[in-house]
Structure formats: structure tokens, C-alpha cells
Length: 183
Image (cartoon, rainbow, N blue to C red; front, side, top):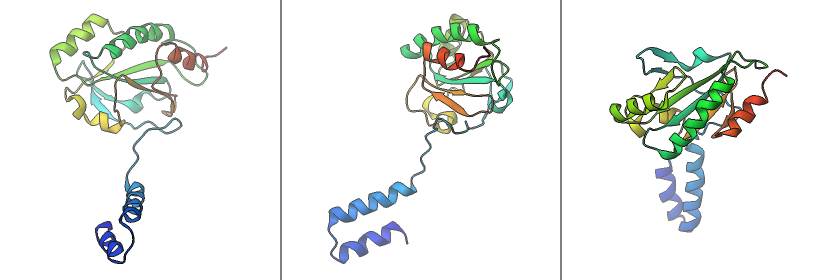
């Protein structure tokens, strides 16, 4: 029975308003789709256009460790973590991993202005090829797909596409990758 029909019936039967409201909120919480991506869950696959206008699909990187990072050229914390990420990428991109071929970075920008995005990409001298920006900002479908609320945000995926860490930065990324290298 729809909630809109249940509430008036409960109120008419003399059940206290506070209890009714609590019951309604509890009932609604079961209906809400919790889109949070948790460690151990499979990362959602997506398709997008890369900076160089090539087609890209996240699943094409299966078999490698992949960091999917959300950022923006105007966000200082994003830029700070970006500098360290370049060093981490250069250190681990050709490492021999236990179950994976290599380390990839997929950067998804929430920039809205192509000029500032292009300047940031050129200035940072990004060594990886997977740069995505649809210039829709917070309205980008990928924001919803990954349930992003703040930037920078990231997800470290194992070779099967499973999330093994999220929102880790700097040395924590290196530590997580180090756990999966061949000894």
C-alpha cells in the first residue's frame, strides 16, 4: 500500500504523530537506493570520450590496477594530490604486480570551462592517457554513477575491477599498490 495512503489511516486511528512520522521515515529508508560504492564491490563500467577524442570504456583496463580519480583544475586539494599522483604513477606504471599487468590512472574532471581544463592538463604534464571531461561539472553522469559528493575522490580497482580502496591519497596509494607487487 502506498505511504500516502497509510499515513492518514494511521493518524485517523489515533496513533501519535511522532510515532507515525518515525514509522514513515523508517519505511522510506528501505525504499532509498543506496548508491554508495563500497570496498569489495564491483566498480561500475562506463564509456566516455577521452581528452584526445578517442572512445574509452573502463572495462578495457581489466587486468591492471586502476585508480579512477575525480578532480577539477580549479580545486586546490585536487591539484595538490595530482602532483603526488604523477610521481606515484611514474613509479608504479610498469611494476610487476601479483595478479595485474600494470598500473593505470583514469582522471575524470568536473571542469566546465574547456580553456581552464586544457591549461591545467598542459601545465601538469600528465603522463597517463585516460583523461575525461564532459564539461558538465557536477551534472556529469559520471558523478552520479560513482556517487561523488566531494573532490578529490578516487577508487583503486584491482585487476578484476573490484574496488580495493577509496579516497586514498599520496603515500596511501603507494602503500596499497606495494601490497600487490611481486616480491
